Image 1 (cartoon, rainbow, N blue to C red):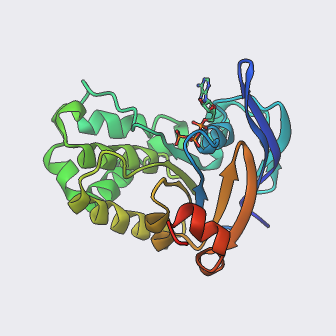
Image 2 (cartoon, rainbow, N blue to C red):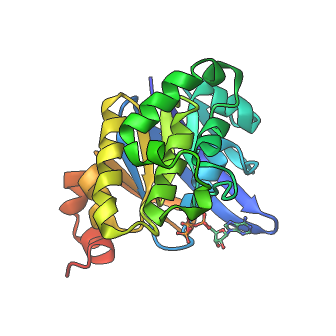
Length: 237
Ligand code: ATP
């Protein structure tokens, strides 16, 4: 059974329809990319999956259950975690407080100490800076906090919205290694990434979104060998 099954999803922001027809099917443990130009609807797709935006049409199933109309906390409780675009940290609060916010639901709260130790093991710099205000950290370290906070809810499926924006090149590889580690723990990953080359380094498969529609899907190799995909997204002639 698929872990996440989105069919014919349609979403509007007020009068503006952002998604017209998005379908994605993700198996447990897969690493999936969501690619497309600015404004194509990638962030809206992640937001709709986690429940931030009501749907106009279509269906979202997680682990075989229809969650299309479920409130955000119940989706989090089922195991959907989001690392939002722009990180959205509480910049005046400490690193540790930000991480603890990720474990506010009843079940994750019981495992808070264990989860915190796991996040610190993954990102040792966060332990060093645990009492510091999150806003004083570098872009890359703030991204580590955002990823760590999402892990604190012990997700089965992690949605990441452009986690490399504002991250210094030298730190990108460190964050990428953490994502590989997370995937190796069996957590399913759906990654929105502007840099197609970078995304294809990491994912098994990807979907391409254009104007609110999922228009192409393929494994990394299928996409790398697709001429029109290459011309549009990889700068190849
Ligand atoms: P980007 O890489 O620029 O974030 P994206 O592919 O993630 O692009 P979305 O952010 O999902 O695309 O945007 C899809 C469309 O919906 C765009 O036209 C955008 O302006 C609009 N939009 C997104 N969020 C909102 C919002 N909260 N209110 C109004 N319009 C929005």
